[in-house]
Length: 209
Ligand code: ADP
Ligand code: MG
Ligand code: MG
Image (cartoon, rainbow, N blue to C red; front, side, top):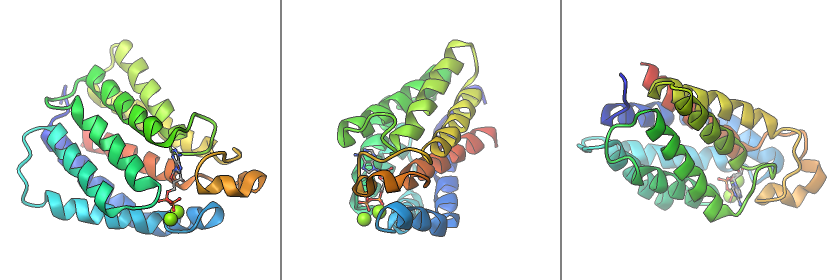
């Protein structure tokens, strides 16, 4: 498809729910190393609730799907990630009342990133999910400006998020729970950056399906 619509958004979230569930233990272990070990549980609980909320719903736009995701994650995930992802999906929903072309994908990801930054006050290099969302939004915008289609734009974003997550490994955390460890946080991947990469890969796979 040249643009990404409601069916894509529903497939994205179905795939996200599955991948979060499949990676629950991995996310728990990442968070156990530099946090309190609940990130996999928090995310799995949240997306299970999202899936239940969307089952039987008849959203009319990608934005409606993402708004349901936002409100459900806010009330079920808890911790730091709940409000961060809630804000991200709420901002993402705002510009998505119609089908998304490549520029629309970029705008959606930029809005999500701005929501995370507004809520968490983290910049890049602080070993948080910002380090996955920032390269993702940049890559989508670059793809759109280079004339790529929506599917290529979301794939570029997903690949950049995977690299961004990987790049958190040597970082020293200066925001969130991992910052309590100081230099001992280096050598571990940030759990929120990893869950963000999983979510964006799910978005790309839904677009390519
Ligand atoms: P908690 O730390 O409350 O247990 P989670 O384990 O669910 O919450 O989520 C932790 C993740 O949240 C971190 O790995 C990081 O990516 C993200 N995070 C924490 N604080 C911030 C922040 N201020 N800005 C952006 N992301 C943050
Ligand atoms: Mg935690
Ligand atoms: Mg916690």
